[in-house]
Amino acid sequence: MAVLGQEEIKKRIGELFEEGTFDPEMIGLASYDLRLGEIAIINGERIKMEDGDVIELPKNKKSLISTKEIFNFPGNICGRVGITLSSSKNGLIPLFGPQIDPGYNKPFWGLVFNMSDNKIKLTAGKKIFKIEFNEVKGNEKNERLNCKSDPLDDIDSWRTNDNFYKKLEDRSKKNSEEIVKKEDDLKELAAKIASVTDGYRTVTLFGIFLIATTILGISAASILTILFSQQMPNINRDHSTVVILGFLAVLIYVFSEFFKSLREIKK
Image 1 (cartoon, rainbow, N blue to C red):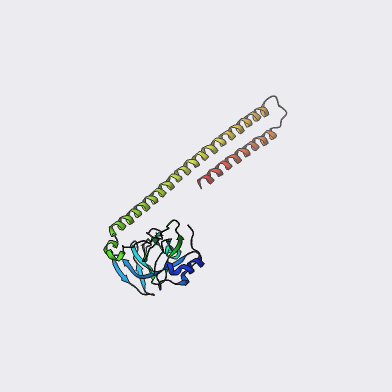
Image 2: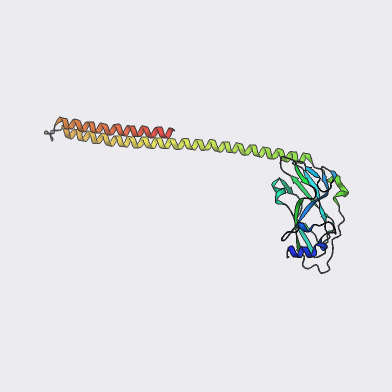
């Protein structure tokens, strides 16, 4: 199914729209920008507009808006409609199917929902939707669609069900609160894990300290035994004193490094 390009749209624009309802300036490289038309249905109320008039779509509600363009598709053309990026950025989302069937001969009616926390302003005659045209293969009879339904025939059916959207809003709020609670639980768990990890570090350092002091103590005792044994009678007592002081210095250094590590862990 081929998409009509810019030049092909220009050639066939009279076949695609009712005369006087299209604007050649709206033709893109492979699409056409649809403009907001003269009628909108907001909260079940029909609103009549002229180019330049501004309407406000209420927040968290659906609205039905029409296009300025009136289609007159032949049987071998269908259209695919989407909303413009600028409208989406403002929080307007489409609730309609993308395809317009071959032979469609009315304005396009787009059901949209304002999901933002503010009213969305739209100006009649300005771009709102975008359509691409596709050739339909296999429709040999070039049959046209007989369009009988019209949203204006039953305006009340387009009223917003406030209870539904209120429930949706409450549910979203509840989900948000549950997410925040889960985040707090995760933070608490992470703090407990960090505490246990610090405890293991302290025990490990203390074990290392005990091993080091034990080795130093045994070494010191062995050397002192040798120094004062009868096997080494010629060793001067001053020399033995120096050895003892040296071992004491080593022990003091080990203690100071151990307590320094403990202070860093507590921080």
